[in-house]
Length: 255
Picture 1: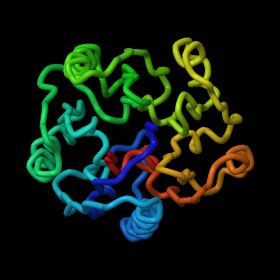
Picture 2 (picture 1 turned 90 degrees about the horizontal axis):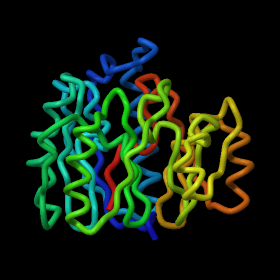
Picture 3 (picture 1 turned 90 degrees about the vertical axis):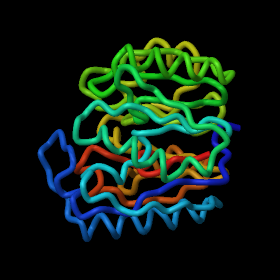
């Protein structure tokens, strides 16, 4: 099953996150970020994962979001190429921090691509083109993944959504949790069973299924009502983290 994991990579919060990229020009409070992050780490631990904790990077405000500069697949880690100049240097640091955890380390060297635009379900990857991921980056990652035995589909992320996974997440084999905007994508509609959340609960669509647990952003009552009927939910507060356009999947790499 695509949601079965044993390990996670998580980075400690940095004080400079107050200057992180924010579409709404918001500045989160470091102390509250630490509190939310502590609860996030506990939830990942409660889901049964061994956590590899990385040190904070003050020179990179968004570096707490380790999902963007790399992805994992089987025993491989693939170093990506973040688009924003304030994030691009993260790839060189995380490469050296985590390479000992994997059998192979591979690189996307051409084009731009971030992990927030990559949805992995079983041995298939959906890459969403966005402001952070261009066609060249997506095609170069596709070449690597196909050589590793995966299949790939490149889609277009809706224009008003930052990352493909900002408003969708895999919660079961062949089941994707989506916002009403993502539910309109032809590829998702034709290939997967979709659980569509109501308008106003888009933030809950970036949930995180880990083994028999479903980490769900706190405060989304309708999503909780829908999902608690089938899934073992752990609610995690991410209100402050959301100020820099982030959610549950962004803060860890899992394999």
